[in-house]
Length: 133
Image (tube, rainbow, N blue to C red; front, side, top):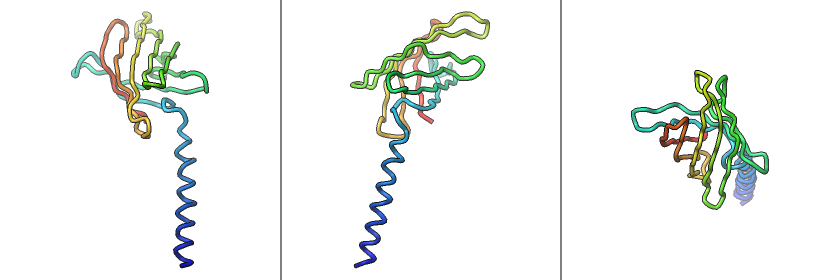
């Protein structure tokens, strides 16, 4: 009887530790997201998106690195988990490029969340799929 009680206490303690660990991920959009976008199945471009939540707004960067594009505005509708991102960057020749991204967050309760939707970059429209890393 005592061994069963001890076992139950150990299980309860371990389960209570798992809940705060899962909560460490923060906002559902927060983190790095990788995938691709393109106008069709044959023409795809790799993509990395870093998103953060400061308690009031979604912020972030498209393709961090030397050609990083800071997100200017990001609007999230938590009722539908739809996201709209606007940004201005430059192409390899230094010409201005506008980014317009409309997506929907899926698998919100899972660590492996997915963000899919429409990606417009410099007049080229395509679809995108990003998975949170």
